[in-house]
Image (tube, rainbow, N blue to C red; front, side, top):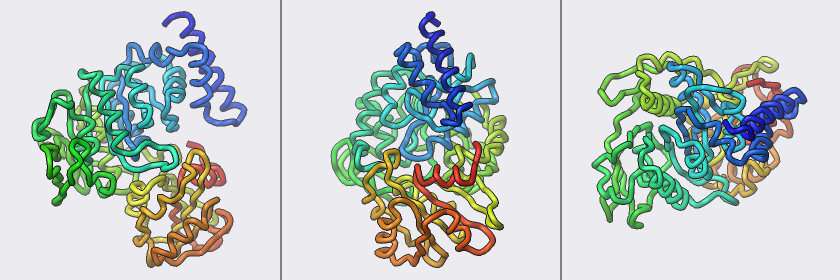
Length: 415
């Protein structure tokens, strides 16, 4: 690397280490921020010589990245932003900290995908899904798909692993010249992990006509845009690869959605030449992802933490949670998005019949939504109050970003 980049990388590592030593955080942002101030091209310099996978989408990025890093690890050391810092500062810090590695698997915030593609020149990009998120500042879903498509068109040699079940993703992954999605474009591998949230993809991004669905299939009523035939698919317990071979996937992570994330990770690893047979056992070693899915015993209660930040992810969280007392915690601080009106896009009916507790800065907003949804609840002021309010046994906790981190800190979890 150029001398400036070497100095910037060294300072980045030092700043991150000092941040961790001072208890100010894991250093995954500050190190990259300082490094990029010294050398604005540091991310590009650190990326040179590595085979890189980028993983982006509205939901599931962190978990899929952790699984993909485990799978690619079959080949050798892998740099990854395991703490979920998914903007260029986080990528820079992760690569600087890792030193020289042949591979990198990086989670990328969907708004930064184009910028990170330019800087890292990745071997493969995985596109998971697109749905509404942080309504006060996030881009409209179709606009996000347009930005993805424009970025990928500028790099036609990048291999793409994309979700066949999401019309927005299919359109973004398909070059404009390819009008018939029954023909897989070169360099695109489709996976099907199942998609239960459809409310952001009823209108075709190509022509504006209605999208119809029947079972797993979907198609536009006004143009050739339709669900492509996936090469990677999932069933309840395993994954089918493009050859038709089936692999039983034993995960320590809950929910069918994580089997889908595992299929995506295997598809990404396959782009590096990793055989599913070699990668599958490594997926079972992943137990907690930046505190998500962690289980902690507290005063005779087995507490499990689930992160949910938008309507699509809340739907999946309800599927993961057991039929047990459940604490919901909602904040509306800057990382969460300040607009909580998205709560009315979530159907809380699956919580009926269990003990429901609510807390957080915006618990009253949640209370109104639950009242409308006819879900009885109890308001508690603190996490400790919630623990004392439920009988010994399991307590499911579903929270958005900062509420999740507040509870995680209170439990003194270390990733």
